[in-house]
Amino acid sequence: MNPTAPRKLKVATTSLAGCFGCHMSFLDIDERLFALLEHIEFDRSPLTDIKTVSPDCDIGIVEGGLCNAENVHVLREFRKQCKVLIAIGACAINGGLPAQRNHLPLPVILEEVYHTSPGLANGLIPNDPELPLPLNQVHPIHEVVKVDYCIPGCPPSGDAIWKVLSDLLAGREPELGHGLLHYD
Amino acid sequence: MSQTFTLDGLSIPFTDGETIIQAATRAGVFIPHLCYHPEFKPHGSCKLCTVKVNGRHTASCTLRAAAGMVVENNTEELNAERRALTQMLFVEGNHFCPSCEKSGHCQLQATAYHLGMMSPHYDHFFPDRPVDASHPEVLLDFNRCILCSLCVRASRDVDGKNVFALSGRGIRTQLIVNAKSGRLADTDFTVDDKAAQICPVGVILKKRRGFAVPIGERPYDRAPLSETALAETAAAGEEGV
Image (cartoon, rainbow over all chains, first blue to last red; front, side, top):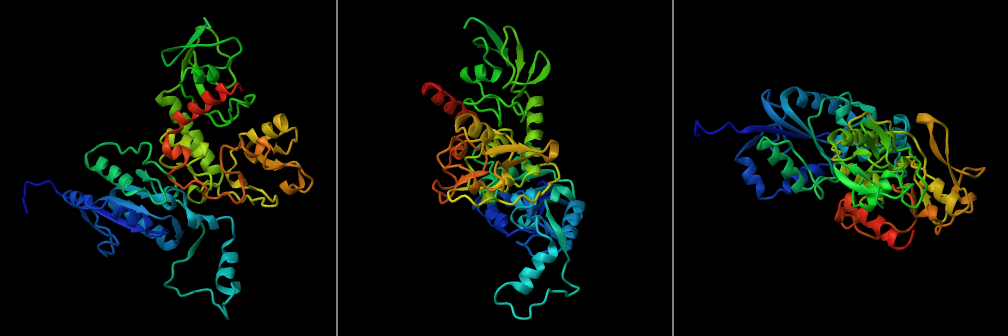
């Protein structure tokens, strides 16, 4: 390793109450991944299977909102360890699809999913102590920690993700113009 | 039209009785707005079109232009205030764009794009607002209502039916249907009403028309709101509206 080369930035990613669609879209930056890897290395991420975030992480990218206690725990770890936190996708930014349950009481949802749905015989509501407890409502991540940047979209396009990351790496304030800024 | 005022340093001609937004639009200057529509009397409620006239905030859809006015419109200060108003509208309702048929043709969404809204910023209310699917041809999804009152004005002033109304005050204001049952099916509302065409967001939707235009090819996907709005107003002007 060249000792004079600038240190690579550590990037951690995670999907909380999301569908991994934003991670798939991240991979849609295609061959630009090679250019990106000149400047960054992945820390905790589904891409590396590392389970904890390094204390000196530079950028944390969080997909998905908060639907259970574990989501909140992971999000707080990301905020604590990462200098810059990016919310990616509709779910992280406004709760997204999982938040469509927010007008229903949690017991009613659990009852329907595990007891009264057609085809369920003697269904049980899962109660293993290892399972994280669901929250009463799904929340976007900015309601729990400070978020530095957002990349909206469901999912954001690979081009939008690339624009924000390349802006940040170049020391520019990220900006998404017409065609890249989408909520759908 | 010998009288003029200045708008962000540009000289804008106007005729007697014209509002600031009317004169600006005719001169090709876009002022963001939601409850204003060129075919209707102004309502002045959304405050998105707020400009500074001689240093004071005022709604440009209700204030008549006067000679010599100095008007600020496209400034970082005013756009930041408009962005905050737009963010409040997003968190007060349930605006889930990925599942909304109006996405890409929604004035609220396009206004947020125009203002560079990257997040809703505020805490979400997640209100419980049941939809009204009673009408055979039109769906009402109150989750997306921004209380612009355009459907109220269209139904009352153009259709002569008075199907809609705003009820309650302050944060409890809501759009209601003027029927004893409160259901759209129990009114004389039809899909051809002006009120069925006017909703700037995704509340009043024609049934069985989903995805007629694919996502990505809709009006505000193709061109930003600032261009589309001016072109639409110009076209309406040529039709003698």
